[in-house]
Image (cartoon, rainbow, N blue to C red; front, side):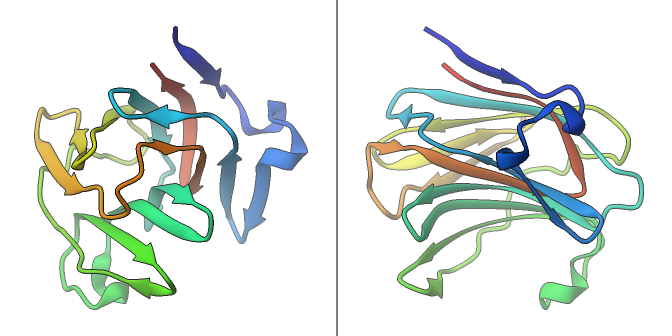
Length: 160
C-alpha cells in the first residue's frame, strides 16, 4: 500500500508542517514509516538562485540519513560548485561525509530521486540513474520522521 503526500503549493500545507528560515522553508513529516524494503520517492523543483536543499531521515535527535544538494559548497569546506553530500549525525557528532553519484539537479527544473531502506544501507537512485550506497549507520529497520529543507518546492513525498 502506498502512502502519498502531494505538496502542490506551500500555502496549502498545514502551518504545523512549515517552518520559515530566512527565504527558505522546511517541511517536517512525522510518523510516516519508512521500513526495510520500502522506498521513499521525492520530487520537487529547486528555487532559482538556491544555494542548497536537502532531506533528513531522523531517529529521535539523530539524523540517520542526511542528503544535502549544494550548488556552491565552499561554505562547508569544499571548493566545488555542485555536490551532493551524504552523512549521519549521531550522538551530537557528524560522521564521515560521502560524496558520490551524479548531480542531476538544476535550478527551476523538476527532479526525482528515490531512497530505499535496507538493513545495511540507504540505496539512493538519482534521476540520472546514478546510485549511491550510503550505510545505514544507525542500523534501524524503521524510520518515522523526515525534514525537507532549503531552497526547494517539494511536489511529492511518497513511501511505498
